[in-house]
Length: 121
Image (cartoon, rainbow, N blue to C red; front, side, top):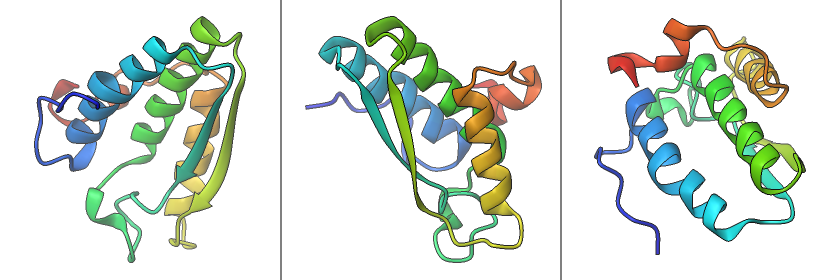
């Protein structure tokens, strides 16, 4: 079982980043998989009419991609696959979040202010 994150509810940039940093990444590091496969859902982006209640921004997706790619380099020789599985804002949110995610996966430098997210996380 994964430990509970320090932030609840798990909404917005701060909750998402805490959950990834405190639960998901440490569990993956302990498990040491041969490959990391990501089901990348972009319906949590704040502009998505169907699922955007989580309130994520493209910067969150870049940060997550960067963190996952960094972990993959450490634990499984960089083997990581990310698959698009959701996102319904065809007016821009899906494209911006997906582009940001790919930038993170390719470990492009993060915008320091944007990478911290609301509240400095």
